[in-house]
Image 1: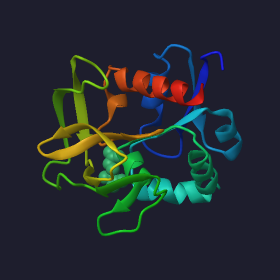
Image 2: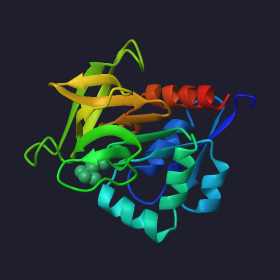
Image 3: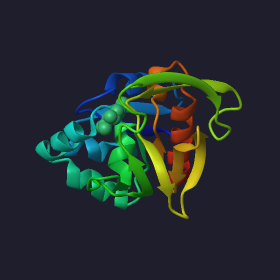
Amino acid sequence: MNGHMTIGVLSLQGSVEEHLASLSLCEAVTPLPVKTPEALEQVDALILPGGESTAIVHLLRAFGLFEPVLQRAQDGMPVWGTCAGMILLAKELVDEPPHFGLMDILVRRNAYGRQIHSFTISDTIPAFSPHPMPLVFIRAPWMERVGPEVQILHTWNGHITAARQGNFLATAFHPELTSCPHIHRFFAHMARTALD
Ligand code: GLN
């Protein structure tokens, strides 16, 4: 591989355009919307965006993408789930069955409660950048527990909001809604290393 990569964004529902725009700021990355199994075959790595996880799962099945995405991920394709995407990646969900079950994390949906559906904080996540960045939480989930293979990258108020397990990255917040492409760059680097 010459370092150039195509990174897909699952384009069924949620913050798709924003992820594509953030990826376009990354060097040597071609962003590609993924809505079909054919498009999935073109990508080296995939972002599962935020949105509504139940709607995304429904559409994944309707578009014949659930099994192909799962298969590619099991075969080693790097996957980053943001918010609803993190819910899709989880091996366990509180009070409901899991979806892809790829990452050894226990996730609680809508964890911050109905009173505060959305809020933004500023914090430094050394794995991504030495500088503080805005972290946007929208009806966000958190991770209640992670398995031994999972590296915790960020916690806030005692809850895990970013983690990595091998080729899988999960963030409870929405980096694509800020003008900081640090985590997109991190994911591109992570994917490039995995694929080299
Ligand atoms: N609350 C949503 C869900 O449960 C996730 C919110 C988001 O992706 N911003 O799927």
